[in-house]
Image (cartoon, rainbow, N blue to C red; front, side, top):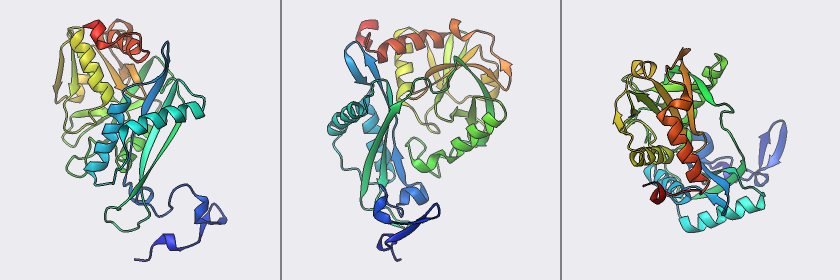
Length: 296
């Protein structure tokens, strides 16, 4: 196959431009086939300066995502963390969202690229949803089948169904969509993990068909130290609708309450829930006001 990189001129929005004008290869497998991996992490302005929250875990997950699809990853995690702080300083950012992405080198074949590049961008990002509680809907779009793609990896090609689901939800007047798998079990929202509260306990979809997020693991750890029982299991949509309360969690969304599902309101106001208690602890944790050692 003739490689597109041998061409000198490409067409871009009505103009003919040399390929070297672009920061990434126009013939990257990431662009054409979704063969790339990415991460999302946050930095916070704390009393001890600007701090990345769990940066090592995020970069290790990025490395693992690349390994799951055999996308080359040759960078040192410690150096990437240092470079992230430099990126924040260069953009004069403190409370920010950072997006690293690993992009496949030029190759239009369907075989794994032999080299890759990493890019990072950062921007000011306060509230992901912009509200206190969410109006959600059960989506007709399903989560990815774990037999067709590594669902626990953050792969660029894995997110089209999420984009379709949340766009459809917003057109219908909702804030977010909740997805199910091919068997009808709840999985997650389009960009966050799901927890439901019932009779003083928390329930969350088990691993296997979800992205078991870093924030999800933090929530479970906080709950354990607050003596809140968390049960990971297969959950049906009716268990969500009949719950006392529910919330979503993720790096971008942090922890946010769900007010309703398909216009059915939960019986317990979010401010009075276990999720709200965990939300308060989580906020203090990311702002460097406490550690797990302190709350044990």
